[in-house]
Length: 94
Image (tube, rainbow, N blue to C red; front, side, top):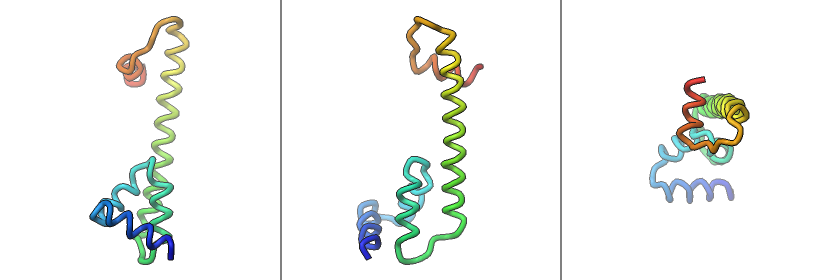
């Protein structure tokens, strides 16, 4: 019952149930919001939890790949300060 109240307060805050559904597919918010939506009364489509998990896994893989490229180039550029623009070019270029 408490979870239903939390979902109701979240939907009232956002004003639209679709906004909560869309936000639950945003990878940083997926673990918490998808569990809240699953616990709430009413059903959500079966594909949404699977899509949420897939997006979280894909985002994690992409961030690990980008961090590896930045780390490799950062080690090679010893002593130089790296700006955000330079790190972004390391991910895209190399």
